[in-house]
Length: 85
Image (cartoon, rainbow, N blue to C red; front, side, top):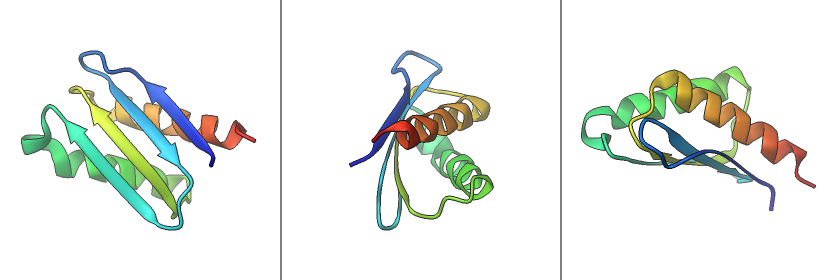
């Protein structure tokens, strides 16, 4: 199984894990989930749309990261997954 990880579990960061999948699966665990769950999911969905990726599993463990940080971590995790053999 191909997998990529980017980020940390430090404050104001996010750890993004991506895996091969037969469907689009997005899981978000955040310290600000009650307030920003939908916004985090939207950043992930928009980024995947930009990259033309329709089938992937994304696990986001957020510690209060801003949108651009989540996007950067997601792109990096996908690039790392693509390098896996």
